[in-house]
Length: 214
Image 1 (cartoon, rainbow, N blue to C red):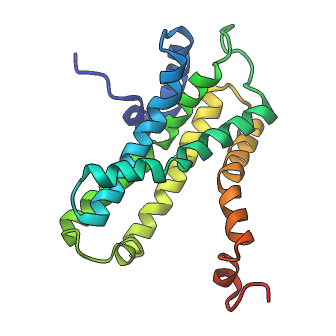
Image 2 (image 1 turned 30 degrees about the vertical axis):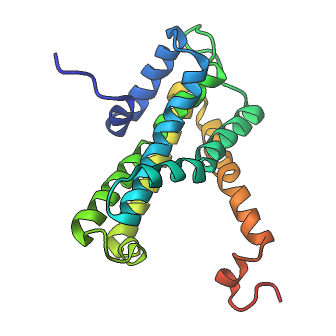
């Protein structure tokens, strides 16, 4: 029998089935709460660190990887914060099949499976940058090309589909509550960054030109 794929790979093909299965598995799992909280956010950080290292120097170095783990720690923390805020407002959904609701650590662990498209995107983009440009060209020019922009849009839609699958299949939300949960998640994730750039007047010149509001 071939080995079972990781939940991330399985979710790319069968998101609703995978999230339902993973949620059920967490209800009976003896995995520690701390491990549930950190293992998938840490995976996301490692992939981001590899992306930064490969695109910065054309090779994977422990120094770049280590600094990236610290420098981009806010990204998974924002995801966890957005998830927690959405759960605080909407609850954790009804018990499924007369089973207890997922704990917060288990919910975080399952929710991060929805980041699978971004893991694939970052890894593939890193390899393409190193292979196609030899790690020497302009990352911005490479990233701003039409194929990369199209791929980015595909990843956004794909990740959104996995978010829907998480709330529907793992949490048991209705369609209306799922839509609200997905919107709240994006607001709470992107909101702090947008507010920061507005407060420091770094966003206004891009939107309005010139010197911001003045």
